[in-house]
Length: 399
Ligand SMILES: *Cc1c(COP(=O)(O)O)cnc(C)c1O
Image 1: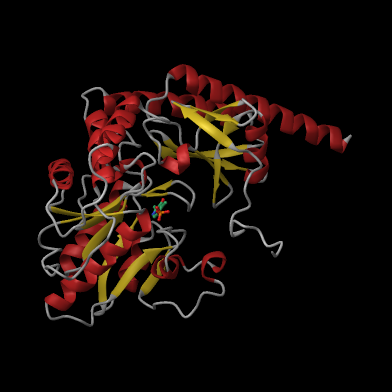
Image 2 (image 1 turned 90 degrees about the horizontal axis):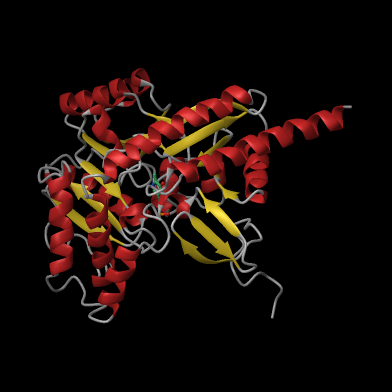
């Protein structure tokens, strides 16, 4: 036996073993309680082990696990129809993860143009700081050295420009451009929110030039902003959109949504998946929508998001040596740090508040959407405490 780690060491994992989750809290193997503002990175949005989801999954495990997409599925049909009713989309394909759902969108775009007799149109405009997953194609879109280093050759079809830069997008469009692909809120890239104007201009450019607009709402979608999808704030609809994360709340699922027009080339046999749309995932997805479509669900997220913004701005105002800027919307927030963000994430974790770093020296805060004001207050108290301790320690070192 070699002493190479049994788990491939591609993560620098924190030395905590979580054993149980309940609502906004996680419990480790020493019985210590953590307030979770990571939630599996915007996954368990309804809180850990939400009773409605637990019940739906339990029931399904005793009924049916696997049939294959060779056969019709009541659960899949129902979830697809519900997503169609809630969005711009006419059609949905289910996958097992975010990156698979994203990749399906790329295939839909490619097929659309080849079907239309424009097979040269294969290039996609992407944005600096974008994150779409870790498949070979998704890392090619990201272009960061950390993600692509050593993995070449990569598919060469992404033209990257600066996030929010309309002139750069215009300049990047060529006769070979097929689509513009954007996260309405840049997740891993640092919680930047696309302006309404930016998304509107992208839509106009796509319409004028016959391009498809592709949104990745894997992180910012599913109620996190207070609307079902973040792009609804801009009133701009895409042609294709991928979602995942909170659609399953921890059960692996992804979905690619498209208009009938964009999906016209996708006929029987052009795409597939063994596990995508399996009965377990469909049962959970439908249960997630049961909870999220309750009339008070999104208004609660909006109210709590406004409160969160108010108290986070106060944290920045009180600790200008630590934090410089608040980003995000609703319950998807980022604090831009002046000191190293990883120091702050580690210090918060020591005080039993879980957060996650994002690029651009940001600390990401992703509370569960079912959180209470008291739980927000609990997190804010820890943020104040950590900021005070950090400043005190610095002064001690200096003296
Ligand atoms: C997490 C994420 C993905 C990738 O999802 P996986 O399930 O990890 O493959 C893609 N896009 C965005 C915006 C994400 O946040």
